[in-house]
Length: 189
Image (cartoon, rainbow, N blue to C red; front, side, top):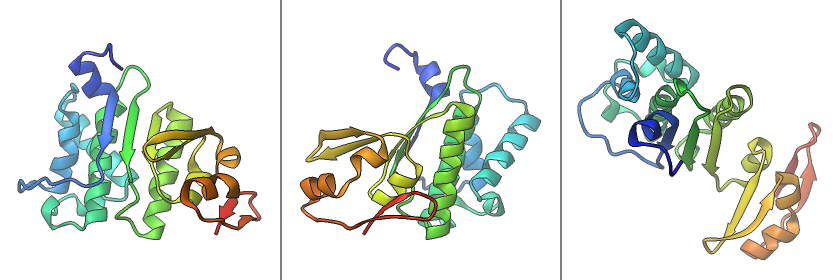
């Protein structure tokens, strides 16, 4: 990524901050369309791509609403649609950085969003890096985990190898109980 020009970075790197303070009177679909700035799309292609990514992020129903009138979770998903549109036309596999993408989402939307980015990672070679504080979500959706302690790398590897009662105890001073679901997923409580 260091060798990428600004234009390449704009095409291949998408960043979703924890919150967005956009105060202009744009509709949700106009915010998503901003993601096409580094791209060469016709008006029809832009309309198609905007709708496609808004449907993927469950935000199409907000297309004509002012972005500023949306809830925090709705804004987060609209911004995710924007960055996915932005990187969807990349010639190389894109990198998407997500800072607590589920922080303002209800439970159903949390899982929908994480399923979407996992699907993009597996089927479209998107590199997804997400900051998550919910260890069970990390266990369920992550392929690899980098566990930080006091801002420093503590452990890295598969969720099953890293998120154990011992590591949780070492990092947070809490000894969780580990359960295995019928689907074979680890759950820490």
